[in-house]
Image (spheres, rainbow, N blue to C red):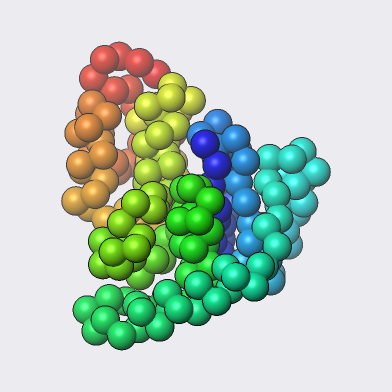
Length: 191
């Protein structure tokens, strides 16, 4: 499985001590040039450079045909008053997700909503850190404590209902609060 990542996902994810879990879930994570241009943090850029050298990350050039589709998507989303707006890098990631079949990684609520409100994007998989961590637990690469660890280290709050649903689906006993990663087990006793 491959993914395309946007800025808001990376900014939080790079703060996480278990950030290389991303590569247990995805074979390659693509960073579009418009996203790369937004990154400023030395920590983020250093991590990206290391993973690019290891070929776990790859840069996706900005292509004219995808740019046109991204601009069109931005206009479509902006015309729907009930939808939060999306910026160009998020729109570009969504277009890449649709055109190339990649999972789109974002924390942007507008981008997360696009598959539910724009028919041409209904089949695009859009994941937040919550879904990435859940997949890592499903694959046995992390335990249920990973949600608490992420919240603590990335200073990121998951939507309560979404977190409760994921924890229930995974059989986690935690409410998602309080313990560090590795400190909790799921109901099957797996670590």
